[in-house]
Structures are given as structure tokens and as C-alpha cells.
Length: 309
Image 1 (tube, one colour):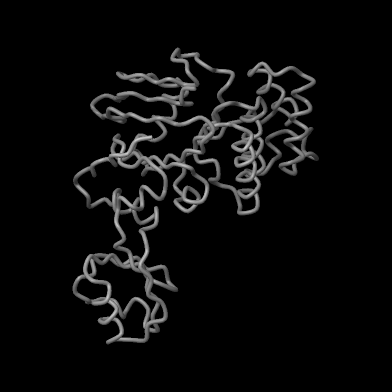
Image 2 (image 1 turned 180 degrees about the horizontal axis):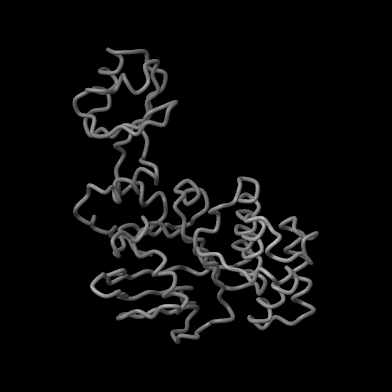
């Protein structure tokens, strides 16, 4: 069986700007694939090309085994980052409209609408107009609209943005259930902790080029074990001025230090200054790797990982 998404040598330009540069990517069926990257990196452009909202200038995109611009249309759903609903329609009418666009028949559609509204704790709002809903409620309605047809491929662009922790948890659990039922899910996020917790594989695009693609273990292993987590009585002040420290990321209760020498030398230097409460050698977090790659002071694009799914 082919992958859910296959991208081969895709380039997209807007005038003189190269938004996506010779991108190759494969998304296995049934996976939960995270797309990360700084603003303007080409992430949303890539998602829109997968949906055929934009067409590549060169290269090839295959979705669910098909290549045409209308390929697999009824088997794919997309939740864009820019939310938009018909505000004067009732929730019931709105969801019926979106379901009908995907060819879902009325009896089955109504059952699905009632089930999803109950799951999202919105049943009592079924006959309310969309304009009467809070921002978080409207966002959950748009998520429901994207899953009513039980898509084979679901593309979510920043699905948790604007949701409070309780509603974010509800949507997260729904995403995981869909994945368990066989839906392939691609979602973009700026939240590295969410990507670490949820995704089977993670893809990062930077200045239009792929710089990461693999499991979290593969990505962390490729960036070494030069991160040390430290907690001391003196806090970050105990680390200032120690020769050999390349970077300090202060988390308040503890600090993450980039150190390329012998870890025992760093420990000895800190003990000479204050009491050490925690000293842990660890792989860098996805957040740390993201910052290393996307830091504004970097003038060059890192070489991509050799492993490609």
C-alpha cells in the first residue's frame, strides 16, 4: 500500500521568494505526523499544496495514491489555521452543509453531528447561531466539520491554538481516537511539547527546506547528548561566566546547559560555587533543537538528516 502522502522534488515560489525548495517527504498511512517550523518557513504552503489549494511550480504530490488536483477530495479533510464559519447559520445547519459537501447522507450525517456535539459537550448549542458561540466553541465546531465524513487523511493546521487546556485536551483525545481508528493525521504546531507527546514522526521545514524528518528518538540522537539539566541553590547565577558553557536556557526552577566538554568538569565548576540539587545529562528537547535550527542569528541552513521515512 502506498503512503498517505508522497512529495517528490516539490518547489513553490511566490515571485522571487522560494517558499518551498525541492521538498521530498513521505507520510505513512495511519501515522500521526507533526509539521513544525518557524513562521514563514513554508509549513502552511506545504499543507496547502497537499490539499491542492496551491499547485507546485515543479515536482509531484501524491495523496492517498492519487495525483490529480481533485484527487481523493472526499477522503481528505483540512482544518486551516485561519478559522472561518458562516456566523449567521445555526450549528446544525452549518454542520449539515459541511457534511453534505463531502457526500455524507442525511441520516448518517445527523447521527454523526449529534455524536460529535455530545463528545465536545456542545449538544445544547445545536440550534444556536454560530455568532453566539465563544471563540473556543466555534473552533470545536470547525474541528467537528472537518471530521464528520470520517476522512482517511486529516490535515490540521495549528488545531490547538486558542483553546483553553480543558478544550485542548478534548480535541487532543479526539485526534488520538481518530488515529487509532486508522485515520492518517498531519498537524502543524508551534508547541514542541505537543509534538513530542503526540507524534509518531516529526518533520521540520526551515527557509523552505527540510531540516528534520524522523522519530523523536532519531532526531534527538542526531543532535547528540550535549544538554545538561542543572538545579542549584544559586540558580542561573551559579552558571554565569563558566568557561565552556555554550548556551544557557533558563526554565526558572532549573537550567538547561549546552556543554561539549567533559560533564565532570562542569559539575566540579558548579560545586565550587554552590550546592547542586540536580545534575542530569540528557538528550536535547525538541524545543531546544528547534531553537538551535531556527535562531535568528543563524545565517546558514542546517543539512537535513540523512534518514528519510
